[in-house]
Image 1: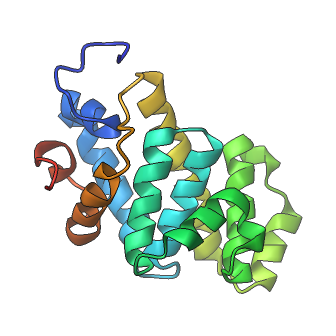
Image 2: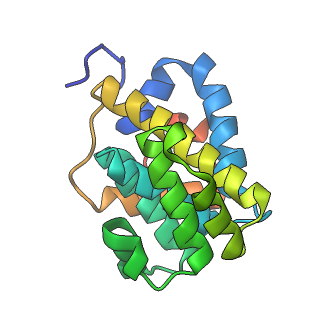
Length: 186
């Protein structure tokens, strides 16, 4: 049960956003910019970073939600998403993404854990300064999103069949007010 009366029965961040549309609007814009850009990192890579940080933060709702969105961008490759979640170093993903996930994991611990060597390794693996910037900002934003979701003790569906439905809606329509105003797709 949520710590406060959110005045709705939506799950996860959707309930907190519906409760406070004034703060939801800029958070939705930030999510749209960070996760749906096609410049540099692909949307699937961006979602994998957000999913991984959410997994490290033990945010059930977010790591399943963003894992499903990544899955859609990866043509349904749920196995790859699970490999990244459990041990990205063994996943069949580019070394560039592995080095960015390593940076994201350090940001999840605290920004000062990222070292010059981590950044140099990412560059050696083909990451641009913008890729590194975006990975750090995605990781930092997801720490905030995860703490928002879990700090209010929002509900998280345990019926895993609900996550792909919402993920499809996000992949098709992006992040915005429909996240907390539109009904769950059937």
